[in-house]
Image (tube, rainbow, N blue to C red; front, top):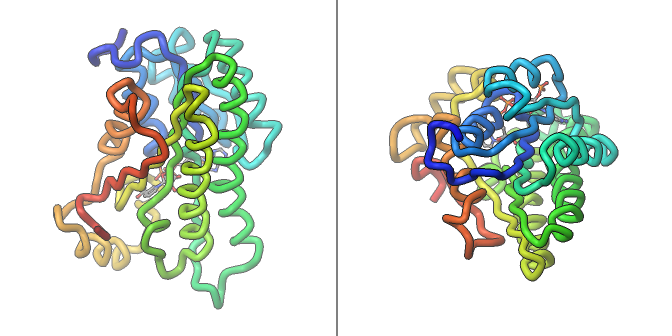
Length: 250
Ligand code: NAP
């Protein structure tokens, strides 16, 4: 058991995009609470370094996975079952941005973002639920964004994909509830990660001005909500969307 209170003792979790940022923070929380975790990421070397930091192969492993590939996602989930014996929690977290106003956005930039976020989350939700329904239990958490609730200029691709993830979450929750599988979504606001550190200063300041709590969030503040959704603390919640934004875009 880690330094937490054992909320996920004995559980097996897969976190996509787990090599850094929010995904890594989620994996860290899960390991601290007693789970064993498999990180799936495009960047295998980074995912391996991350799993080492989490405590090595007894508790954390890494595989290369492009979530937009059905075969890659299938192989990633099989690897978790092979390594640790079950699949109790999947966090569909992997993501990219390809921001541009519609005038400048290319068809390829639209397709890439929809494919990683929306198709990636569908691949994970479908394939994990096949394993979880056999077990009679499981939890799936889909990483949306507040951008999917309000729409952001320069993000017609990302906002569409993140809103789509909410629809996917609700439909899947209804299909899977009677099988013991819960599906929920998280909508982070502005969180300090490599993704947002790439943002121009003026865009960062503009977003900060919209946050009632007056600060950006830290990755662990998303991880704590993902711990709640992964654990029995949320045993009667499915199909819900948690806004974790410091009050932005209420
Ligand atoms: P991040 O630091 O860029 O981390 C994303 C991770 O996903 C990276 O390790 C990346 O690998 C990986 N990845 C990208 N494409 C992938 C693919 N096709 N298959 C597998 N892994 C892939 O981003 P983050 O800020 O932690 O974001 C995590 C999630 O939260 C995303 O879904 C994002 O949209 C969402 N979110 C973030 C914020 C925020 O403010 N940060 C706000 C709302 C929502 P590479 O480095 O190799 O590309």
